[in-house]
Length: 292
Image 1 (cartoon, rainbow, N blue to C red):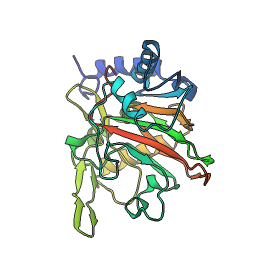
Image 2: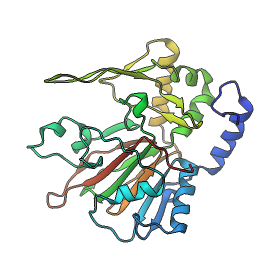
Image 3: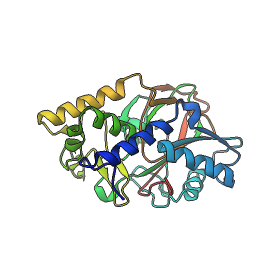
Image 4: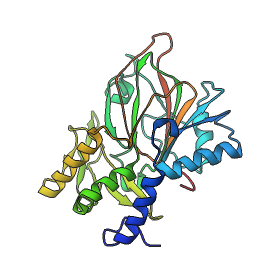
């Protein structure tokens, strides 16, 4: 099959582009699918969720019944072929992270923004991982929302690719180079905890699926310094800053969850209710959603 991501294949790209634009959701409401029990989906519910993932690489489920069971994201993932969890060092023993404001005793998490109430800039998960640990699938399940704030903006990475390629195919070429984006090493008291990691922004996996590796942070990141690469990064920033119909704003409430092929997302700052603080379970997978 001819790849639409081959810069020399304009015919395949135009066919893919036309289909992608025609099926793109027009609002965040299109992304939301009501389900009864996300851990035990009916055939109809599963089909509806998968169809939206096929259109936009993401879907938001809204459960009619919900509880604080940490096994829910695992059960959801299993139903979509997601099994190979990225058990990163801040995740629990089960490989699933509890995303909440860390308490004063939890020094290991306090230095990392996801475990604070601060805003998080645009990124894809695991942008600092090695190619062998590429995050293809991701799930966020909300147990308790914040008293105020904590919204996410979401954008399909394929739509970013489309806009960049339309303006200048050379932007795709340079953003696909293996040294265009480098994350410096992370150190701790014991030395180097994570080695320096260079890699592309865009890559195509062994199944012909597009993957994006990106962070909008300006610290702890080094971009390749040639003129075209810097222009591509600048235009990518413009795309993410624009008031675009391709950007969806969602606030996950209790029982809701984001299932996606590691799309671009951010988070606004939030204020917690001390009696019921914001809590989300996050599962990262090396797998991609099956059938999408």
